[in-house]
Amino acid sequence: MQLSEGDIVEGKVTGITKFGAFVELEPGVTGMVHISEVAPTFVREISEHLSEGQTVRAMVLSVGENGKIALSIKRLAAPRKSSPPVRRDRDRAMPKGDSQPQSFEDMLSQFKQKSDERMSDLKRTMEGKHGGYSRRRGSRG
Image (cartoon, rainbow, N blue to C red; front, top):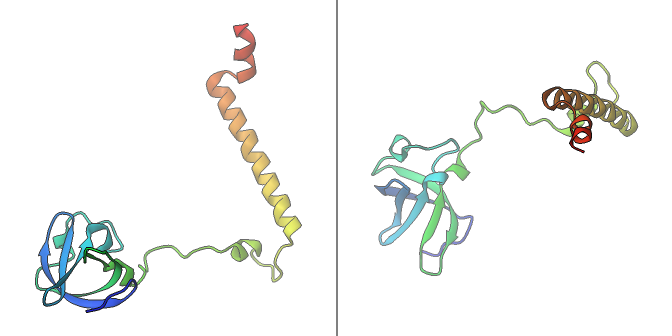
C-alpha cells in the first residue's frame, strides 16, 4: 500500500492506549491516531470515542522513513455546529441599519476613539491600584 500525506484511508481499530489508537489499514499495515487527533473536542479517554474492532476513516498526516504512519480522524470530522460563527471584518464594517459599508476613515476614527477610551480607563484603574506611577517615583528620590 503506497500512502502519502493527505490520503483518506479506512481501517479497523486494533488497539487503544492512553496516548492513541492503532488502526490496521490492511494486513500488516498499521497506523496510529494520536489522542490529539481522535476528535475535534478534548479527549480525556479514547475509549469514549473509539472501540476495538470499530471501522474508522482517517487522513494520513505523515509516513515516516521507518514506516510509521500518523493518522487523524478529527481532520475528517465535520465542523461542530455549536461553535459561534466566525465574524469577518466586512461584518463589522457595516453598521446595523445602514446599507452602505463605512469608509476606512470612519472605521479608523471609531477605532481611535474606542482605543483612547480604553487607555484612559486603564490608566485610571492603574492609578487607583498603585497610587499613580508619577507620585511613587517622585517620593523615592
